[in-house]
Image (cartoon, rainbow, N blue to C red; front, side, top):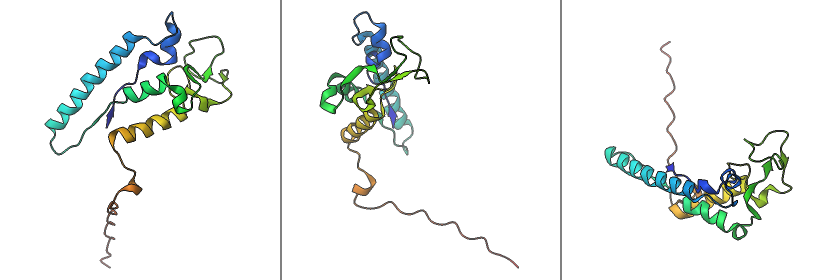
Length: 156
């Protein structure tokens, strides 16, 4: 599985750099074009290597839905990070001197770039549904156990 990009124009870093505080559509279009080209490369690779199985994981719509409808998923904030350097933004990343939000589970983004743990878990769950994956304990048959290697024999 090769995953594409989410709406990169909507990460807190891009929002704080815009004059309006909104998502930067030009950056989002770049992400969509990257995903389109990457999907083609992954599909072509699968055709060139017939005994392989490749799949492109387009997560753009799932992540965009979480950012656009945060309350639907239990979030209160989808445009600023839980961990920041106070009013000094953008910060490069979360550092020991950074200020943390009171409840990170209410934030879609942990820092200027990365989704929070709760957002990552929710996005993964949505992608599993989208791609039709099943948990191992939900499949009909179990995977075969690996065979043990033969024990070395002694010629003594």
